Image 1 (spheres, helix red, strand yellow):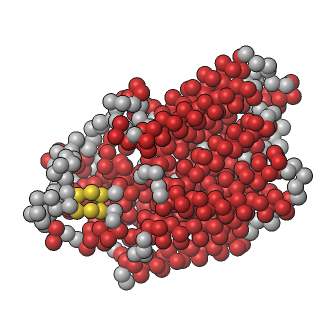
Image 2: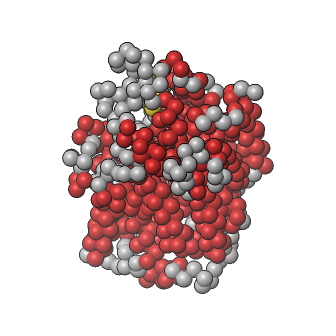
Image 3: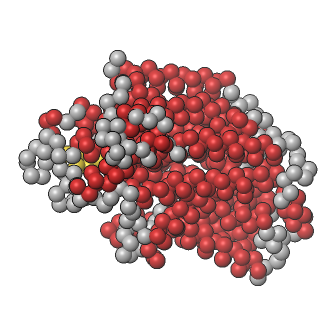
Length: 565
């Protein structure tokens, strides 16, 4: 069977599975729509959380970006993994103890302020749309290559699938669909990695093969060979880095605290029955995430080595079939500047003839390594599962923010649950349309776009949630001022360097050498400084709020054992 036939078969079967689950898990109440009824088992919640968190950026783009920037790509591994530990230990159990449907719900009630709730809603929607743009772009890339359609058409197909199970099942449908999507994506990620590791290093475990020697060149380590190939073409050694230490630190920190402040990840801990289940499911999720994250550096190194040996300095007419296939999508471009019909790959823009979109590296890896066609189709299904699972989680955050926090908790408090459920579904449908627009017109690479979302979350939600749990004196004035300062500063910095003046987007012009990807850390620090300063010069929270904070800071005490209501 051809690659396209395998892709149709495997992707079609997985989509039937997702739709079947969506029909089975149709939400009948607002509680099922918002938190899946609050009775999801820790194991299922761990798998759903892992799928929710491991997006197109993790599956498609992370290994691609590591493949191109080498050691500097480790900021994504350290930031996203460390952030999850931070979330699991520092926030998840306490938020579950608080027992609300959404992050704006927590902010609004903790800071006894409708203004704080509205600011949190704006932050949640802004962050979610920034994040979901990267996911829809990933869906478009996969469909474009494997179904031979335009990227715009691929995004449209993804919109239809997400619309179906997100609008019908809400959190209940999304949760059990994400369990299936985790199984698909992790299998699809590991199978080619194991294949290639065996072929290149003779070791069945990719993580061991990554640090091992080459099967065809005994005694030569993979990374040494990769350093040699890179320097021969004029690139920096693969294992060296070009980012400054301060930028690496700020990007890693922004990704860490951003992870801990992402509303679509936090809300997953509201779906379990007890506080103890939140801790257990966090442990499961970390284990499931680690399987992919420890494999990614090996996948990146395998892809880079195979690419350089297969394409660079080769006659264009003798390139393998996969090259022309990806050329048709526009994600690989050969510009024969010296008209010698030889592909010359170089870091020098004046002489470089090969342009490769970083987002294709994982998807093209099986073809570059000449693996069986069914493996290529499997990777396509895995990429779609990763992108769709996170997109669904983000769309739910948007719909619940609108239906729960804006309509029920702010403007129409006496609305019936049935009408609220209708508003939630309409909001989810509207969010799908906007997400599709950003998928067609993305503001950057998938991983880069997602990194911006993490920076915005770090600068807005993380300080408000952290201080909300651990500071009895933090009041609504401080929290509101901090969130507004943090997100405005961070968004302005990103927009200035990325969209208004992209020619100035380099270390020479950045403040203190901090790139837009890392500015969220400085935004978070400003948020904390402003919040603590303003709260010091205004009234303490009411006594009942201070007593509530004491209560949620002791997770074991009076564990409600009931879902949020």
